Image (cartoon, each protein chain N blue to C red):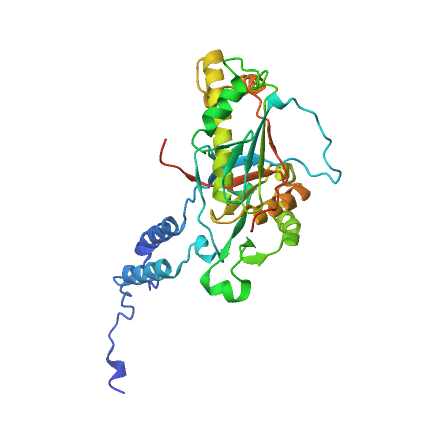
Length: 156
Length: 174
């Protein structure tokens, strides 16, 4: 018992905070390693072509993204090797487009719903067949503002 | 009795959070060729008659070859060709009567490469943009992008962009 009664009058030694920065640094590194940027979750390979007459899309909230490209290697067993459409984070068919657009539209205030742009991120190797089909589906859904996503071409 | 936790490192935590968000936020610049699609209608579009001289037809086949007004052409000279067709500075009788009458018609195949399609579209758009720039330089002495809204409208009326896209053919393999 003598062992425990040893403590003297002052009973609150301050907790050392010297190692706190280290802990936070560890957290920081953990998140830095773990965070996957949005683009990495693409299930189709998209390399956009380059062009010169580019318009910048200003308001992110008014843009929805449609990806068209060949499924990446890990999804080829399920989705095949033909170019596919990706909406959000999953493969989709043309018939899913109206619902996808509507889901995005309802998140916006009513006065902005007419200003929605669809950004078509299409791989440059894709043939026009599927692109035309998507364009027709967009027209049928009343989504007429379309942006063919492209990189800035260096020459000229 | 002071059992408070030392708050001295709160600032560090906040800084780290800041850094964390700086690192994860990608300011992904999304740029592209802006296009306005025609509205969908169930009925087939009315057949309009245009004079042949006013239509600049560009066909792209499944091999990504260009056929401009019935003749094979390279992509490189397309921009100049479109510009000359619209303005018709030499008053040729097979080019457009006025810029207002000029129509560029674009038709591709389902087997056409998307890259080629976009390049062709880009060239046509570039031709119009260059013409609008020249027009606004002439009228207002500055580039089109620096114009006021009503000035832009004037230039747009002088050089209206009439680009018609036909339904793609389906000869080629997709």
